[in-house]
Length: 452
Image (cartoon, rainbow, N blue to C red; front, side):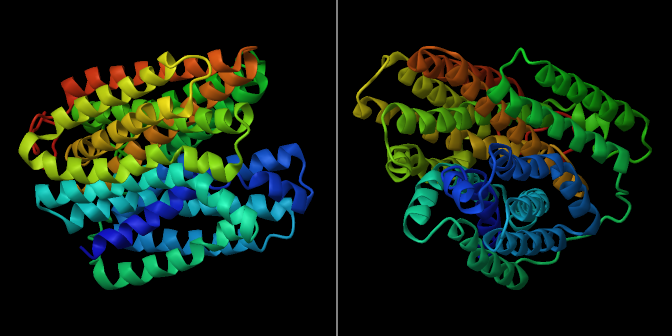
């Protein structure tokens, strides 16, 4: 099991940095005398770099070897975290966060590909994917709790310093226990396609972030969305014409690959939209501190590890489809239960909905991950992992932007919160219907996409 903690440690760092900074930025702004724009960039530049260059990280892993690229990403991420902790100004911190995001884009695609290589047996691989997936839910939901604890005790710079021992341990474990990955030098980097993907994700994420601040009717938001569509169209044209595309069209057309990636987008939309809006609700409406908010969200966190481990063990018996479908239905029930709880429900009434959402999301992640990784031949493992995680990041960005917009533009905060939860529940139901069609009933089921 030694490769598993090594890979999961790197992934945990990456996802933790998406959320842990949220409760720290007020303290960062005061200490560095940052403007509102500077504070926004401290948060956003990491996500933009991370999401925008995932496909590039996946292509580099396929070409140069996933272990080499993974270790390079961990090194870059760890050094950038040290630079963040020592930053004397807002500009330096923003630049260091950008480099952190680039390191994250090298880590995540390689993490899944390394697990694919280290655990060739379907049962062991399902368990590994389950634990890998649980890292995302735990890190995302524990971020506010850990950030609040660190800021209130030792200061905001420790939000970044905690990455240093984790990064060093990850490198040591990977170097010792993870075997060198095969290289595929014939996989030429299709830079026009990579740039088109980066532009698509950056424009889309930026436009959605601005929608939460400016409103959906703002021309800047629509211009960003229009340019993102054009960049996505450019990617499609390039892939059709390229001699060696980043992902061949026959793979992109695969119901397994495309369908499971869409499922990932939808459940990230629901889960991260819930975490974001619940965070604001507990702090702004109920007056919770950052630390108390993290504790209030803990029921959702507690379920993620248990659900992922359980789904990994059950997949061998039931196949992936029942687990993904039931997980999505449970997530929909959870968010629907929150929406039905009323305008100002007692906190105990929200515990079961949060637990159902956290459990359902993690329960489905293992099967959708296995579906994506089983839909492509080994030489495209990094690219498939990158595609899956890019669509999930887009789902997270849309969920957060929609939730923020609903809370910011409505006169009734509670109504905006409930509308956000209903939207998340509908996303889960859509994902359940899609999973029933695209996720194979049994591991190793094929649709002609060429998983072998």
